[in-house]
Image (cartoon, rainbow, N blue to C red):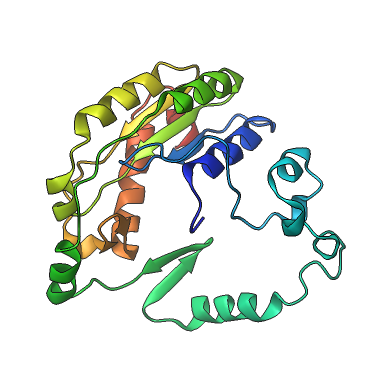
Length: 228
């Protein structure tokens, strides 16, 4: 979700692990790692599940008012932005909206990339002990495979990346936890024409990456049955 931190991803993962099912859960891991705190700050729209005790515990009262819990009026005022998003998905020639993901159709110009590349700074990989402690508690609850995958970044971003060894160590740690798997696709040789910014793929890049991720899942004997 736009604006969400890794703590909210962990919160949603824990929710999925409490549900029935045996299909793998795929979790994106950014190459800069686990930032912030495992205790989530929720930025998503939780109006349909405000009765969930875990949601109530983490949302302050002002973010779960009475009107947000009453069927029929809890989405009052939301029609216009939802209709605008629907029209944008149907009519836009520059973007495609797919299950909530907004993907740029076209590549940026060389001039735009020159400006973007001039602003990129070196990134490292972080995996604080508090995150490892949270995952040591959560991972044994996984009765279905959890797949952590890392996707590619733009060439200039990769040239400045300083966290490769720490990333590999972090993925090795994750793979050693119960029912956890890792797929490292950070080094896919994708050019700037496949990105909308240094760390997000455009439509063409997303389609190509989807195929690469699917192939990697098929090649893992423990996961292949779920990806025929």
